[in-house]
Image (cartoon, rainbow, N blue to C red; front, side):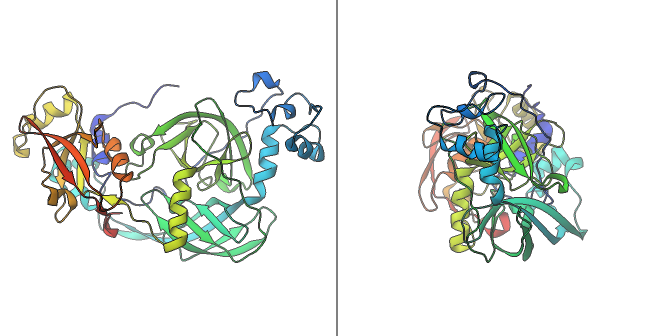
Length: 421
């Protein structure tokens, strides 16, 4: 599969707002799913198959001398079940449908008022002062605990005070939105119930492209839809995914995901949740993206505990420094910036917010960030990752290039203001 094309002029505007603005990413749901028929295959022909699931994969169930628990479950379900069916049978009851409604204001983020963007991308900036619109959305979610804690996407429930949660067995509950974090597109919902089926969480630590991926959700209103594919790539930046205001390194999969799959689980071949399906690209087919489960669970724990999440914040606007960008900026006299054409990588600061940690530390427009805590940075997502990994109040050491000289500046991230999310 070809890599995503690099369209510098259009991407610059969105990348630059990455650390300053948050927000929904298509509230009605991002995801996609089409049925995938996996032909019968031998255990040797199935990448990612484990010792536990291998006995379950041939033309019919192959019983081993000492069959694992999956094989026992498969025998109860029928001799034709494979590892995908086993995974779905285990997790499916814990996958829910979420219906919600909200009033959505139409606003232009303040970041787009930056003269840098107005200069180059005036025609790209969305209009402001449009009337509010009413949105009804259907998404997915999955149950984390038997007591009714549910994980889903922020854009599925953001702005809705109550939601309706429907289980696979048909039971319906009124849900309470316990917390929303638009920066990572993670939200949590609580329903009043007991002894509910819950998912088993896995890990992305040893995840690799080519391993199996299974998606479950409610795409296009088609409840309990299952699709399968592989892990296509890891560590996709929010800009590559097309939602640059998020702070997530996404899992890419070719398991079909459609609108309505948002918030549903992405499983490995053992039926463990390794991600939460969240986004598709409108200009592509066969590409879906999921939030790694470690990120989603970390945010969910904070939301259930306090109802909010604090993200480290510097208060800068950035663009990736390239030879083309250096040439364009140097040619614009009104920008009053002159950059060295030294072909060294880095991230250019094009805006510094008032009363921000960056302003207090002395960062300036025109500074080029070369490294953070000794780790080289080549793009705004690199800076995002370093800042997000820090703690509020800690000191970050930035290596910058200014006026032909290299220097070091210490910055203490603060909590991201609510109006910048």
